[in-house]
Length: 186
Image 1 (spheres, one colour):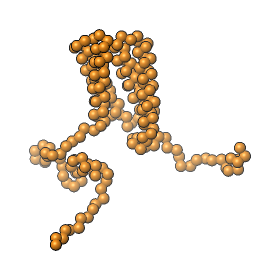
Image 2: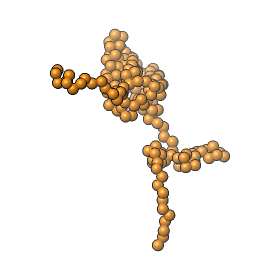
Image 3: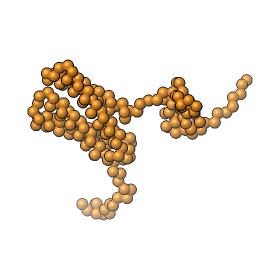
Image 4: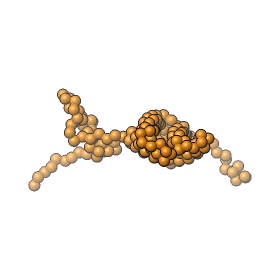
């Protein structure tokens, strides 16, 4: 009968388990993804693009396609519609990446206002490309920005555990309370 040496299970962090499950190399065990003499990546290791990069880029591409659709239905055909779409995708993608990169430094309300302002200004501008009046486009953009503010504020407040700053305005442990006899009198 074969005897196997006992495996000693070392405590691992959730990050280490997640890294191991995604095919990345754990540097704490002495391995590296780059060989020391050539500087090339070891075949078989994958590097994933984080969601903080892919989501704004995908949103910018979708918004660029929407801009092409909106300008095309407004009567702008071919190349100019494509240029509007590409320009919109580049600008909104850059602003989205900038916002996502610095969102950890913002408090919840400021972050929600930034998302609302970016969304409202973008939608208002694309709405104006259809030939609508400036005041009507500004009102539509303001309304959509307000909706985005409320939705993002709701999402940020209900997912507090994933917030970079922890709980939203945690209350101090000691609360000043009225004595019980005053509560009963009222």
